[in-house]
Image 1 (cartoon, rainbow, N blue to C red):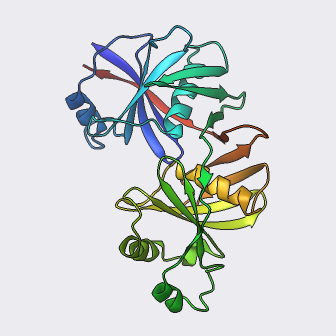
Image 2 (image 1 turned 90 degrees about the horizontal axis):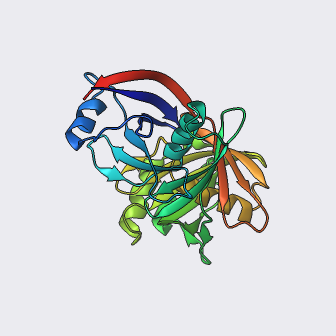
Length: 277
């Protein structure tokens, strides 16, 4: 049996996407691992399955697996890719889609230019900022990239710390993250984001996840960065956010009286292919 697939790029992630609505197959973890191989297989970081939903008021269901064949949480980048593919292939004949993701429902909008908007949720800012450790601050005296010595903390599916800087290219983010990891009791998976504010509509970000390292693709910490940017008056309404390495970028938008930050970005269909089961 030949199974059709689409290779896609979105927000720094590359995905193999399988439409299991117009075709039917049972995918085994060992097959996912073989397909993820970049030398002998398709090569991908994540695999997304588009499936028939369990509930009739949903448009489709989505499950995501990593390159080891283990099911993982859906990221906004995954849903942007699958929504764009569903629209392009006309599996669903509408731009506003309701996606079933486990027990959750995500409303996604596909725009006429091919970009996709998705709600990220609203990060909760914690009341007390956290100062950089004294020993580290003393070492950083008169450092040109440092604008302040306080980290603004936000909570959204974990802890996120945000630091405004003058020049991302000079920030020793791994050293700063190591220092915080040793001197704070933050849980594993917390993130540290250094943010350079170019103007009220452009932010540039470097993000380090404790226990993992530098992030080069979409992460929910962007919602925390957005919440802090608004609270600190760095940005208003809609702002363009990009990773410092240029791998991913998109727009964050806040709507009045809405509980979500909306992220809008373009995704790319790289190629179509077939693979034998």
